[in-house]
Structures are given as structure tokens and as C-alpha cells.
Length: 534
Image (tube, rainbow, N blue to C red; front, side):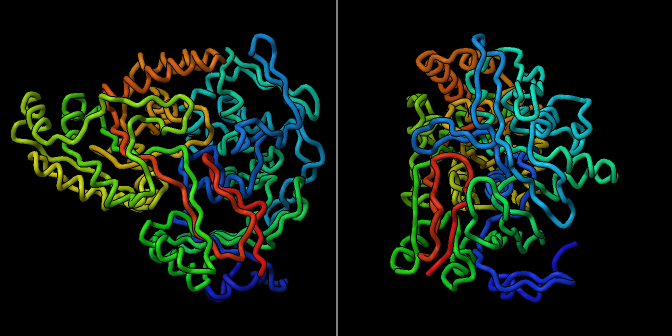
């Protein structure tokens, strides 16, 4: 099934060759990516590196959010209406949208209401044949409670569907506009079921997006071809290759030697070198994200808020900002970044004070300290450019108050799996928002539902906190929602299930011949309009 490669140079310069078909050289682009994908279906993961690789490249949603105005824009839906009581949302669907034709599936019909019903009923309907494929884990939707919000999805006609909700919710449309809410093919799913191959559904993708899946070689590459019948516009690139390159220095080296055309997350040191190159364009964008240090609050002694505060007081965040972010981030004063409309600076977040840290530990019964682990993610992300270096700085700070720290690292997908199983004492992670809605920072990370789905790294379930989120979602009045989110931020700063550290700036470096790629303040990256011409 998969294409044989003669070598990486061939991958970068030429189209691939099937066993029986020769392809002429293609206009293509190579994007240096930092990690292997967890899956090829955004429904079943919240991993940002995976979402960048697949969501906007292979799929479409019903609607999206304009990154400048924040307004909803039709995508596979042409329009929508909300009932007076807010419990029904009706979408009119776009006609003549083609699904991908691949080597493993040839569609016999266009996108229609059946695909929408199938896609979202998988989340909550135990009678959907795919609900339990992949252990029934849909982490984003489960963490924001979407699987508990949708009562039914009604097919009104071939090109109209209605979502029936148990109650109105102010963030419903925003959640349908995330990169997780992509539309999948019901016909493809049923074909795999007939062939007893249902486990392939999330690994061999079929969507309606600008690119068609061609092949994946773990730790090497992902290859896409353009979708020749893409509904929105002509795709400029014949071929798109993601070169899997976890090491940031290697990614920059490949950019400079023209092995890669685009690379994300260059460090500040690398950026200073790249700015001197006329053939390289460097872009930076304020972004809705947060890097944090999360404590496993179900483990002793991290179940004690005073111990968590003591540990946070020991950390010199200003030194971290200098040594890790190099001016490409701002020190966090809340869980929310300052560009969020619900942001409120928290004056009671712990500040660097080793003496106070020692006093608090002694009062909590740990005057002699203890041993603990800090898990450091092995990839560079917007919210944390170098988790290993950050962990080493924290290890030194904590040693000064009698805490012995062991740093733990794993391959990225293994790391995420084990954090989801709550094997850690503490972990350096972060979150890049998918919508401007403030709930996107709270429910996916700190709700009780997120704990059950394994996506709450603090393993923290607080019914009072959940009630604040529910109250914020029950109203559409922004001023009221803002007050609830202010209280939520205050509770996080007081209880400290996680310690917000920084908000990073999103950056990318690209060859000057590459056009049509813009950074968004939220969500993943789209290469639908990318081109590469002298």
C-alpha cells in the first residue's frame, strides 16, 4: 500500500513512484514537523503537534473562526440558525463537496447530512458502530462536555441537520469551529466495517480538505497530494511532505540547506541567525496559549495546596523567561493570556521567595524535603520552547529548599499516554487554544470531565470550579461570562493545581519562496493556500 522511497533526497525533490505508475516531478513543499502524529483523526487526540499535521490539511469543519475578527465563517455549512430557546441549532450544508479518493477508498457520493450525523453521533451514541473504536476516547469533546450536551442530531434533509441540545450553551458554535470538530465520511466508515477493518478509520484518513493522504513512515515523513476536486479553491501545491524532525537545531539546519521549506518554533538564538538571511522569512504572532507546571493533585504530598504553593515559591520564573523564552514570551499572571477578553491579572500567584517556600514546607510537615519527579515534554511547543532546560532550572531551584528532583522524559506519544494515565508527580506542559472562547482554557484542562478522559494533567476535580464553568456557559452575556471566568482564574491561583508560567509567541521560519502561510492567534496551521515559486 505504501510508496517505496529511494532516499530522502528523492522525497524532497520528486514525486513518488507507485509500483505501476510513473509520476512526473511535482511542485511540492516540505514542512519540518516536530513529532509523529498520534492519529490521523483530530476527534481522538488533543495533541497540538498532531493537529497541525492533519486537521486543516485533510479535513473541513462546519464552520471556522476568522482569526482577525473572531466571527464565524461558513465552511461545510453555508448558514445556521439557533432556536429562540437556544436548544436547537440547524445547519444548512454545502452541496457538491467531494470526499478524497485514495488508494484504499473511492467515494460513490458527495458530502451530505449523513456524514455530519455519523461524525458527531460517534461521540455520544453507544449505538454508533464506531463509538467504541479506539476505546471511546474523544478527549476534547469529553473534556468540554459536548458529548453530554448533544441530545440528538436530526437529519432534516440531505443537506440540512439540526443539533438538539439538552440546554443552550454559549460556546457550542465555538467548539464546532475547533480543529477537533472535523467532518468524516460515513460511507468510508461503513465500507471499513463491512471489511472488518474498523481500526483503520482513524489511521488511514478520508476527508474533504485541500490535501489527500498518501503515506506515513514513522519518524521519517508524511506525504499528502493535493485534492484535485477541493470545493473551496484550487490547491497550489501538488505535493506536501511533513519531514518528522524532533530536534529543533536539526530543523533549522534543514531549512538553511533547503531540505525543508518551513519549520515551526525557531528559538530566539536561531531567530537572530535567520534574520540575517535574505532567503528566509521569520514570522511571529501573539498567541492564545499558556505553559504551566501541573501537579498530580491525587498524589501525596501534591494533594496539599500549601505544598504546591511552596514548590511554586521556589521557582525563579524570571530566570526561566530569560533562559528558555529569550523574549519570545511573557511571564504569566493568570491561566489566561493577556490578549483574552476574560483575562484578569492574579496578584496572589506565588512569586519567587525561597525562604517562604522553606517555611511553608516546614509548616506542612516537610522540613526535610522529599523526592519528586518533573516530567519534561520532549518537543518544542509555542508555550514551552525547551522543557528539558526549564526542568533543569527548576531542579536547581528546588534543590535549594531540600527537594530532590528527578527529570523524566519519554518519546512524545509515550509521554502523552503516561501523563494521561497520571503516572507523574508533576509535569511541564501547556495548551494552545483552538478558539478565542475562554472556556477553551478551562474545560479541556481542569474540568472533572477532563480528569475522567485523562486530559487533566493536574488530576484535579473541583465541583465548585466546574459550577463556575457551567454558569459561564449558561449565559451569552459577555460581561456575566467574564465575571465567572474571573472567579475561575482566582480559584486556580488560590488552589494552584497547576502553576501558570508563561505565554509564548507563535513563530515560524520559511523559505522566502514560500507564500500563503499565515500564523493564527489560535488553532493549528493551514497550508491550504501555500505555494512555492521563485
